[in-house]
Image (cartoon, rainbow, N blue to C red; front, side, top):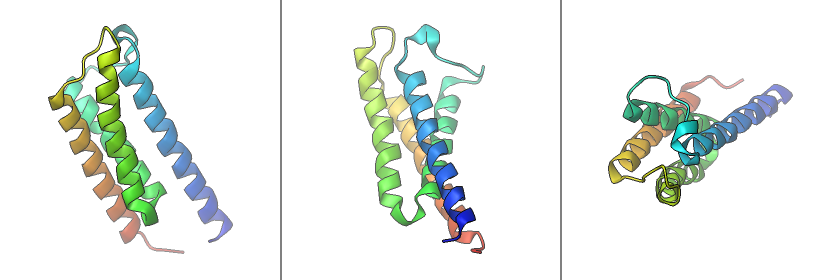
Length: 119
C-alpha cells in the first residue's frame, strides 16, 4: 500500500467510527436533544445507516463481514438500548428501517470499492 492509500484508509475508518458514534449519540440521547433534519424520521434513520454502512464497507473492504456485523449489530443494539431511555422507545419497525439502510449502504460501499480503479 502506498502512503496515500494508507491515509485514505485511515480517514475512511475514522469517518466510519465517528459517524457511528454520532448516530449512537442521536439515537440514545433524550428526545429533546435529538438532531433533526425536518425529513420524516424513517428517512433520517435509513439515510444515516446507509451512510454508515457505505463508510464501513469502504473502510474495511476486505472485512465486509466485520463491517456488516458492526453496522447491523449497532442498528439492533441502539434500538434495544432506546428502551432504557425514558423519553425514547425501541420499535421493531425502526430497527427494520435501520437494518435496511445499513444493508443498502454496505452493498453500495462494497461495490464502489470493488469497481474503483486501484493505483
